[in-house]
Length: 378
Figure 1 (cartoon, rainbow, N blue to C red):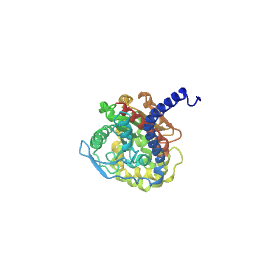
Figure 2: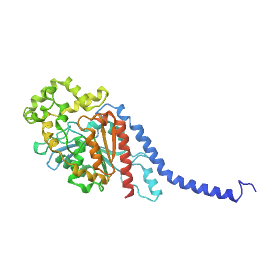
Figure 3: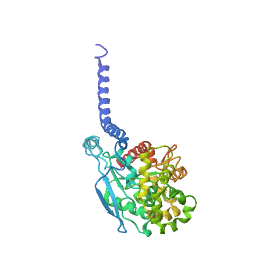
């Protein structure tokens, strides 16, 4: 009897068949994950293929607690096989003896004097792959104009909760905030810490802080050059009463303003269309709105509230050349949030979500994977 046909060979074949069957079951789930990740990778340059600010979804209106109308857009995932809402992931989960975890909703919260369009590259990258929510903060973009009393970071936290209750009332949520959007998330954490670790399963804080900010630096790209420098912080209240005149000066000084945007929003050379795009969002924000939110930046002091973010996977991202919310703020957040990840984008500026969108999206991939794993373990 040959060695290949003897009892030892039969045992080896049985073992190999058993191992192959076990590996097949394990790889069934892995294959879906690999396919999904390949789709994510191939989408990372999707934003380069469509004009900036051109991505849209049917408008929804969410009414804030003070009656203000907030403009919201939701990109629903595709239902193709192998996609995040497809049949195959659920089938694999059932074969493995588990029920499919509920799909994530990712809510993007934009920054000061911007609009939901600032998430262009992230929106393009995740469109069709995961349920994403974008909205214009009060007094910004297409949302209603707030009165002065409600133009505060605390109110923005309440607005975020209203958006969640309206368009993501069920299922796990990941929050992604840039600049003032990150402060909005921190405000919500202070107001409703019980949401983090339960309904909210992940957070990303990008180019932001929870306090200790020099608000005068934030205004520099948004005011005429002659009004810049130290005088900004001391005169913004006076200027707000003549906000129409300031807006006229901003329009007249468009070329100077574009140079200021390039210098303060980006850390290195970026395509001119990105500079013009950001400048257009800043210019579209009336100076009255800029002035109304200014006191909230001066008084912001919420580092005591960020510890609850340690209950969920949290990514912190900032460019090392950020001249508005410097890298020191992100390092401080990282030191206060247990288990958080810190991505420092060398040489990038405040608009890192555009300037280094590939790096930012790769970090968000990691965050979403960690959040999904957390949900699956429940």
